Amino acid sequence: MNKKNKCDIDLRIVEEALELTCKKVDDTSKINVKKVCIGLGYTGVKLSTGHAGLCHTQQSELSPQCCQVNDKAGTFAGSSALELASLVKSWDFIKNNIGIATLNALFQVIFERNPYDYPLSEENIVDFIEIKADDTVVMIGKIGPFIQPIKEKTDRLFIIERNPLHRNEGTLPDTACEEYLPEADVLLITGSTIANGSIDYILNSSKNAREIIMVGPTCGLIPDPFFNKGVTAIGGIKITDADKALQIIAEGGGTKALKPTMKFTTIIPKK
Image (cartoon, rainbow, N blue to C red; front, side, top):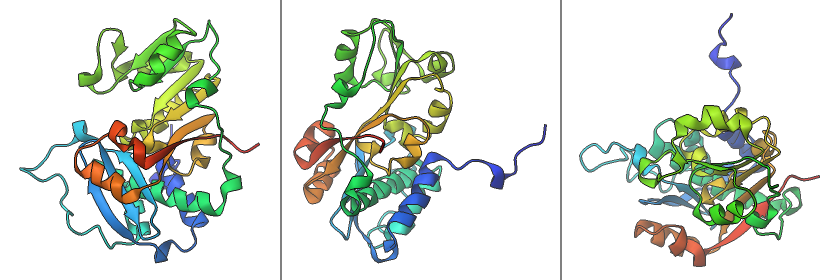
């Protein structure tokens, strides 16, 4: 069997998102990054346009050198948005997370300019999911608010969690993906899988799923590459108060504290 050359390997979703974002925002070179904040819960980026984006900080994946987790600290603010968005190609988690947060902010620019290209559903993402009693539901990442509503519809819910600190009885490690993903009728995926680089494997292993829902603040990238991979809805956010959101992130806040600074959105494929 011939091995693929590097140039023949399919682009990762984040790389596709980067390419498409650059095409949609033709004045990317004129947009700068005003502020970068790497918090314990989220990484946040604010653009010169006033838009902001978030990415779940992969704290459990970091190995700080002494007191430092970012060797480029102090140099990101003032950079072009394109330069920082290109960090999604990096396998350094801090740089990658900054890149994803930048792409999330740039999608807000795209959405404002092309709102009819990305239909929004008024439904709560929990209510949007069609689950039958005999469905096998696989949840990638322990997404607390979804657990009880799903259990009320089916008793075949399997939760797969990467972080051992978030696992309890009945929760499976991420090594169980190989067994459970092909069996899923409905798949719920935390946006953190974009941040830790596992999203491509998950979607490629879930060909039999009828519904694939992505959820979380990290899911704010341009959605086309996800829809092309079978995702049926994306429950993300829009930051409505960028300065306050980045202050909360800097002070160690998470989703609960950020709620007053954002609006939940559900984006569906255009028909």
